[in-house]
Length: 249
Ligand code: APR
Ligand code: ZN
Image 1 (cartoon, rainbow, N blue to C red):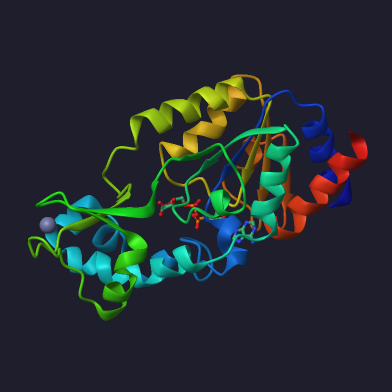
Image 2 (cartoon, rainbow, N blue to C red):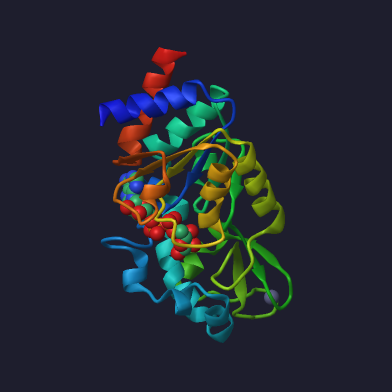
């Protein structure tokens, strides 16, 4: 493992435009369940019912029942993996974080340029009267299972996250593609790369000549497309990489 850490650190130390792309795995050590793998959320919930736009429009209560799991995401704290990435940005090495996560932990860890492909849990809009809420102000009601609009009583309060069947936010997606094209080192951390179009972004970087690095706890079916693959926990591996980069530069 150490020689892999050394190789990744060398790539970062000599990079001009490194970009990090993250998935649920980077937040696992913050106590947030991932979607796939051993005790993934999609083993306990049907994504079609609780996380698709069709399911939401059919029955918003199913999403809000699932939302109790999402409260964890907004109460969680960044872990050493998030802080390591923020430090690499402060060192001028990482130019952007592209994340599929909606937990805002990269920002809480100090990362400045964070492109949230799937939105975030920060705000919730009433689809009937347009009133906007902050997620944090709804947490008690979510726990009680009584989520309805104060103004008009609607149950269609929708967080600004991308549901299955919805398009990704256009500007964020095009900025993420631009970052991938400019990158010379592109590091994927904690993603099974199963969901598109997000999962195509690392390969846009590769097509543009970037060195592709995978840091993930388990093997993925995309590993063979990467230049370097390190199987390990983000919270353990990333701080070691940062320490090695500091030795080199
Ligand atoms: N460190 C590194 N990787 C980890 C860790 C860890 N501590 N714990 C788990 N992993 C890895 C798992 O091995 C898994 O491959 O993180 C990956 C998480 O994969 P998913 O659960 O599929 O999450 P993600 O790739 O982010 O899912 C993408 O799917 O359901 C949608 O919108 C949802 O944004 C999500 C998208
Ligand atoms: Zn309303």
